[in-house]
Image 1 (cartoon, rainbow, N blue to C red):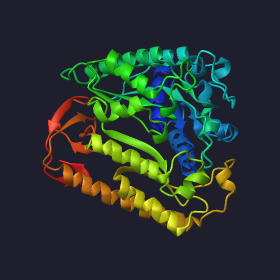
Image 2 (image 1 turned 135 degrees about the vertical axis):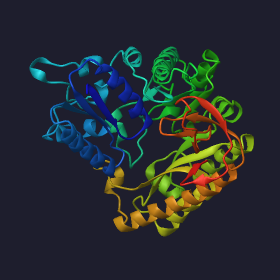
Image 3 (image 1 turned 90 degrees about the vertical axis):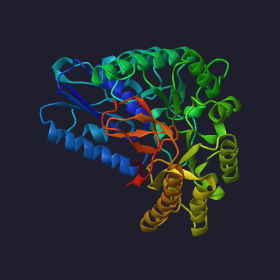
Image 4 (image 1 turned 30 degrees about the vertical axis):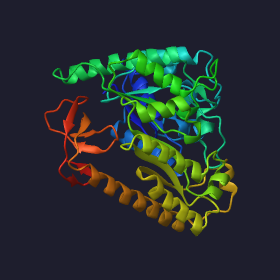
Length: 427
């Protein structure tokens, strides 16, 4: 073993973990936990991962990075299993991962001021990226300028920083080349090239706000599609619906290479809860956005983040959370039982009983499961182009899971027509 990187949380962490793995390619045996802090449970999972990796690799250097390690740097540094902590600010700098005199590694810092050469740093990280996935994850933005009352992530990621278009295009090209090389080595019979690129970030739809000329995410997506006409699939990570610009809306609903799978940062179906969260959209705006998208592209699949049991949430507000699942047809749901994060305004609000929070989260999950079951049933008998994964499954453009032939090379595309559903997978 040289390096093992365990990534928790978002797709941005996944992309950054690949770069870290590249930095550690020639390092002594090292294990890294790329931690998450989106919920209290995510922090607990990060700690459990640290303890397990230490048991599994007693002689390796163990380093923690990511949001939890940035927000709670001292606490993670105090864990006996941990040799070093590398903050989010510097985890994409190669020098942060170089061995130091006396055997130390990394730095501990809570300074979230972006490095002055953030774009070039990102480019260097992309060039060292090791392709381990069937799709290429490309970070285009980091940080967040909003102040949602429940969220601690801005404390771990800092202000929003966008990668300029020229650097994104270079990153996409590097990701395609590196992932294609790895895919070809793993399966020489596979068609050359990566068939899907995923744009990631903390607040992707805010991309461009800090760049000269105030470009929008739609401009970036259009530039990628123009620069790489042979790229079959471009997928977007979680979007804030209120920030979807007109060009991006047109590309999502009218460009077949942009995947019909939109994951919205809804957070709640209750206007009162949204107001107390300091979200910038209303329930009606969210439903209207989904209806307009589906009118123009009926095959679009809607995903959403929803928080159950937010402070002050009444039974009526909870039912509005449940009903928006049906009204928007949410088939890919990330349901979070609310947990207070110290230092956030919501932690100081009147809390809902934890037992009731869990019950409400289960009810919202059940609503999503019912929508998903109806949606999967509607896909039986309809052909779809599937991107093969490494575990014997694959994903359609709308991100439903399909069983693929066992001899199909990971990363390749195949047309399949399902006849049944087995444990949530179309076969």
